[in-house]
Amino acid sequence: MTMNVIEASGLGKRYGGTWALRNCTLAIPAGHVAALVGPNGAGKSTLLNLATGLAAPSAGGITVLGGRPAGSPAALDGIAFVAQDTPLYKNLSVADMLHVTRNLNRHFDQPYARARLDELGIPLKRKAGKLSGGQQAQLALTLALGRRPRLLVLDEPVAMLDPIARHDFMATVMTAMAADGVSVVLSSHVLAELERVADYLIVLSRGQVQMAGEVDDLLASHRMLTGPAAEVDSYAGRPAVHARRGDAQAHLLVRAAPDDPVPPGWEAHPVGLEELILTYLREPGAAALPGPSRGRGTQPSEVAK
Amino acid sequence: MSIDKGVSPEAASSGRAAGASPIEFRLDAASGVPTYLQLVHQVEHALRLGFLEPGDQLPKVRDVVAALAINPNTVLKAYKELETKGLAAGRPGQGTFIQATLSQVTLPELTGLHRALLGWLADAGAAGLDEDGMVALFTSALRDFRGDRSHYRRSGHASRSGQADRGGTASGETEGVA
Image (cartoon, rainbow over the protein chains, first blue to last red):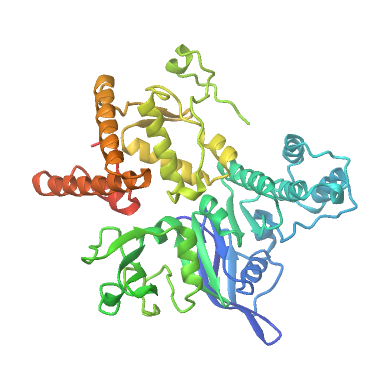
C-alpha cells in the first residue's frame, strides 16, 4: 500500500454563496506526476490551495503525505508550492531571494539551490524582476526544490512560458522526481504537455471530481469505436461515454477492456489522453472514478447519449 | 550529477566512456504512439540497424528524463518492457544493458526481401497507386496477416504469452519478434 500524497474526503470550499469545490473525495498516491485538469472555475486552484494550507475547508477534510492535516507544520515541512505566475520579490536580487527563503524555512538546502542556479546560468546579483520569464520560473522552482520537499505542488506552472522554457522547467521537475523521488501534483491547461509528464490524472468539473486514476489504466479501459451510425442505438454492449454521429458513420467512446470483442462492422481504436480528457470535459455527466464501483460498464453515473 | 563507477567490460572494450549509451532517444508528440512505446521502438529499431549490440548500455533514466522532460516512470516502463521481451537486462547500480539481438534474419536474406518489396512497389506504382495508397494497402495486408497469425497461434498452438495479444490490440502495434 503506497502512501497518499493528497487525500480528501467530502471536501468543500465556499466563497460567499458559491461552492468552488464540492463534495470532493480523492486519494492521490505517491510516486506519480498527478495532473489536475478541468475548465476555468472547476476548482483546481482551490483544491491546491486547500492541500497546501493556504485556504481552510468549508466542509470535509484534507490530509497530505500520509495523513498529515493540510496546513499543519508537519505537512508544510514536506510540501513545496509554486503558485500560478511564479511569485517572486521583483526588487530583490537572486542572492537575496535565496537568503530570505533560507531564513523563512526550517530546512533549506543552500548548496543544492546555488548549484542549480549556477547550472542554469542565473546570475546571483541580478534582480528577480529583471530575469526572463523562464528564469523567473526556474528560480521559483529552485527555491521550492531547495526545501527538499516530498511533494511538489505546481499551479499552472508552464502557462506563461515559451516552448523552450517550458521544456526546461518540466525537465527540472522530472529530474527532481527521478533523482529524489519527489511526488508531483500539478494543474495545467496544456493537455498536449500532460501526455509526456503525467501518469496520474484527476479531472475536475464544476467543483467535483469527474475522473481519477492512473493514466495507463484510464487509457486501457477506454476505446473509440467507429461504425455505422444506424447501429448506434442498438449498440448495447457497453455504456457509451460520448457519441459523435454523422449520417453514415458514428464514433463512440466506450469503456471497455482491450480484449473485449468488437461488434461486427465496427472498428476499435485506442484513445489518446488529450482526446479522452476533452471527451469527458464535454460530457460533465459522465464519470470514471476508482473505488468499489470500479469495473467495466457498471457506472450508474454514466450517461449513454 | 553523479557518475557511475561501474564500467561494464563490454563498454570498456568498445572504447566507450563509462555510462555512455550509443543511442539518444527522441520523441514525436504528433505520432499518437504512447511515449514508453516510442522508446521501446527506438531501441528495437537501433538493434535492427546495428546501432545497439549486446552489452551496450541504454541511456540512464535520469539523462533521458532531463533531455526529454518526461516522467521517469515512463522510461522505467519502457525498460521493463524491453526486459520482458528479453532484449535488455538491468544491472543493479549500473543501469540497463542490451542482452540480445533482435534480428534473426541474415543480411543476404534481408537484402533479398528488400529487393522483392521494391519489385512489389514498382508493380503497385505501375498499377497507378500513389505512395499513400501503397502504405494503406501494406498496412491493411499487415493487419490481415497479423489476424491470421494470431488466429493460427490461438487455435493451433497455445499462445506464447498473454502479452503478445495485449500488445497487439491495445496499442495497435506489432511486437516485431514472433
